[in-house]
Length: 346
Ligand code: NAD
Ligand code: TYD
Image 1 (cartoon, rainbow, N blue to C red):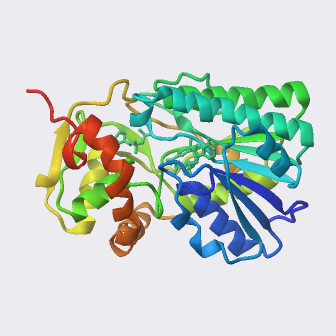
Image 2: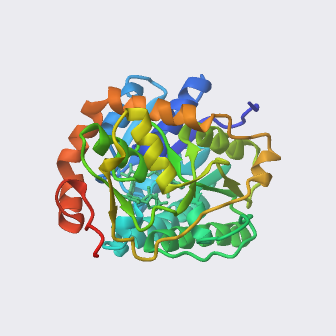
């Protein structure tokens, strides 16, 4: 891609799904890169996600929290750029533990911003979500659309975004924001729709489909998002927000049936369950702005879904460990045994 004038990057929340994919992608591509990955290793952060990077002298891991002012200041003072993936990310959890979302997604973002302001950085890229715009029945949101979040998750992400913008306007901090649509791919924690349904289907467990299954999401393969984040980091204009969509709008019904088809499992595994409170009907964003920087999603959707299903089939040790731990604790408490959500009340 471009000629970079910085190579020391702090990646916060890098032990999660997108962050670990991004670190791997950048280390393969840039021989001179130096990555400091900080992560609190919450239930979603997983050392298995970056084992393959640990032996590389260009990589170091720091176990820490983005709200820890001292640790963050020290790390930010050593790098040229910050990319923040750290967040509480699961909408269903935000319905029960909203405070955790405010703490990390708002207060954590503030702590990073203060450190960046104090130490100075060339770029501070914050990874956000299309969910801050809320639901849209027709057409697509561009970056000028007002924020209209529905869940404590998206509201907290919106709060972080607004703080980011304020530090650009007030302090001229060179911030950037990406707002991507729903990602899927290897290393996604098996609580989100696609990995939950793949792993349940492998074990012939029910797939708890919320409501009428007609909610629409725009699916983006994580590799395409990594390329978009790289593009925005090096080519984006400070202060700007970039939507990153996959151009793959599908209903949850369609996604569920495709997973079952790829695994050769029967549709009788689909279990309609009570709808999620505040469930956004459709997300849709226009990615015209980032496409002007030269990025476009390159992966064919069905091929990427097959790659993803194959990865979960071949990496059962990775996800079985997770399903045995906190995952079951959360789901058994709130959704019933074995990850089944409460069945639809007739
Ligand atoms: P994830 O839940 O897999 O990973 C989040 C990571 O953040 C974990 O490793 C966790 O340990 C870490 N973390 C949480 N709280 C922390 C704290 N206080 N300090 C340090 N680390 C902390 O999430 P993901 O799917 O990889 O998402 C990454 C980012 O992308 C998030 O900001 C999310 O809002 C955004 N995003 C995700 C999607 C998606 O579909 N997954 C879509 C759009 C935007
Ligand atoms: P999810 O992966 O939680 O992402 P988000 O809510 O952030 O878009 O959910 C994607 C869609 O799948 C959403 O419409 C809710 C639905 N869904 C189910 O129907 N059943 C489930 O068990 C989960 C986790 C999600």
